[in-house]
View 1 (tube, rainbow, N blue to C red):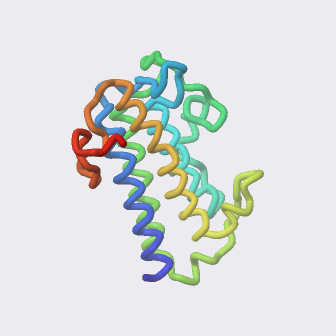
View 2: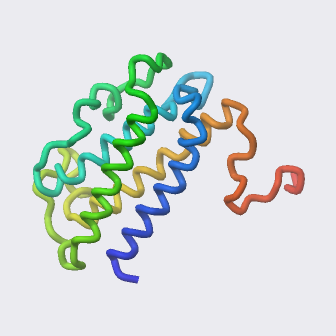
View 3: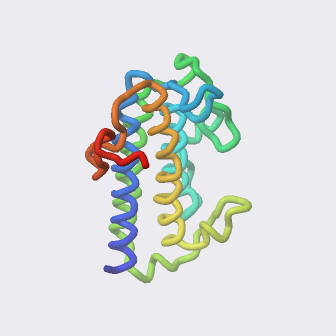
Length: 178
């Protein structure tokens, strides 16, 4: 497996692992994952969308097409329960899909050697993680999977069935509690 193939695999796997759970919460997008709040599904989706938009900004210094949502979904923002303060789940999801597709097309256009190219504008304080095109794309996939727990915890908090169903988990009644 080449580095490029590994990055494509990681991006596609992380997308499926997270979006499957976020999509199940589209009818309850501001369900907090804990009684004490936390990152609800709409905030997670918006945050992931914002980060997808950073890739061309980091690589080439281009503007982030989701930057106008930074005050809602940026790193130091606090998710709020009032859905009317956010764009709709469908709007954010559509933008996410657009930006993820663009990033996958960008990856497809790169050679193995291009993956070692230095980025033009790595985020301040994260220069090492975003030093090259390849490391930036790996961080993108890893970052997405880190937010999967928020989505699955929101599902659990909403009382939505076995979140592991279809992921190779044994049904709850067959698990030995000893």
